[in-house]
Length: 332
Ligand SMILES: [Zn+2]
Image (cartoon, rainbow, N blue to C red; front, side, top):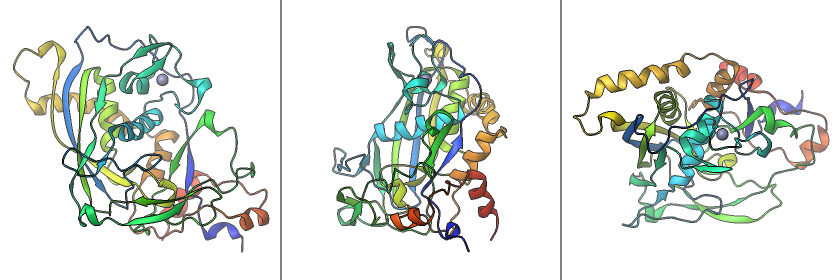
């Protein structure tokens, strides 16, 4: 019996779309021919949610409610847009967009800072807590350890992955709180987490966004039914699974900005067509994305980093593929 099937590593890789990145000049901010307005969203935590970013600083709203920083949400959505919209990978310096006059969809929507600056057509507010099963002053803190288990095991953690692959963390529905990962050689920290069922509100402000880019934005916000985002800290430890729902919106064409607003349904129908192309897309990239972002509350698989003993026993074993993960998922 191989040691292999006892547990799954906390992340897996999605293959990036093949071929040349489609780039173009972003809409100028002085020419208002794109979409503008606001999209109001609600984020619901399906698992524990560590609201702070890297250092888990507790940010609060003006009336002292916990918030998820807008910059954190932007990172989440940009990352999905890179996969879905064939954008440049922010983690890979060599393959990034190089000029503000020729940008991928992710840089056009969320902004670009390099040779020239493109501010992006979207800004995302902090998400403020609106409801939680536990009063936020009583949210639990838990001690967790960070640090990757053993980066020396190149057979398991390949080094060429950044070019063609995109890393996604698994949902871990069996965990009600972040796992206290015991093997990390790095620091131990206490993190506070929002319990599952906590709900936050945020808004996305759109300015001069083209129709196809707006379609991509709508896709990455809500995803498809049954899929969920990973937001905030401690993703490898089981935190962060969240769904986003658009609860209201007010969008119009730039050229109509001084006229009456078009009928909402008509507008959404038009934008919906651009979102549809991603829903109907059965490329390997999209299949992998659906498989790895699927939230299945009945999935009881154990997910954790391998420890040193495991690596010693399995020096040549490779990280399993998304297909292996998805195949196992389909069986009882
Ligand atoms: Zn780019």
